[in-house]
Image (cartoon, rainbow, N blue to C red; front, top):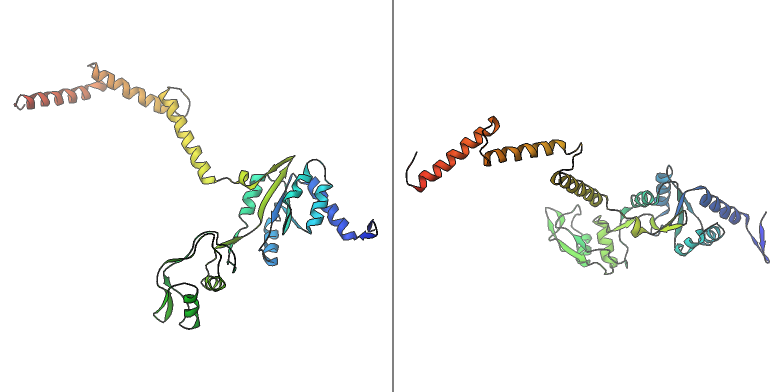
Length: 287
């Protein structure tokens, strides 16, 4: 039965939608607010299918999202501020960092539209194309792409930055880039914020460069190992190196102190021979 607000009846489907959202907020460990701008309906459906095993993506009207969050317990209503434009809510039992990484993997290259701002310098590389001479030649040239005819095909004469970062892309250039299959944009589900047990996480906190982090762990492990060896802190990881170091230092001490031991004799003889040779050369005599 529809709820009545003043003289206006709230449709049952809206009430059901809000109730479902509130249940999802309650039943999942975390939820996020995501943007799906510039994503086609087909792409969105594909992303929803790919996420199905680990997350629930819910797309509905912003007013219903806001109502559901405002009616939820605790500090959940704080997430309302991140709802704007084309917004969806995503629910999962994974942790916020895994959700961020999972959504980053939904991004795919996409053509840039006329009037859009270049996210970085857009470069067209020198080389052949698959296009025969014709209208495309003047179309590329009109977009500022240096072209010529080589071997019966249109070729890019030189590598050139055709649009600098921060500049708007013209209609001609957008068309040309699309035909050359140069896709400067990325489309995907963009995470705006994640809520977990009273804490709101923003993307800049959740972004982790895994390669950099791995390299830091490797460096830290190497430095800790070197410290333990230099400080003679014995453990199962460095015991062999410590024994080898102690053996080397003992042999060197034996050589310096001229201790006649089997393991030292070869080095003592070698040292004596080197010293004798030096003396002979200094006195202009040869042994």
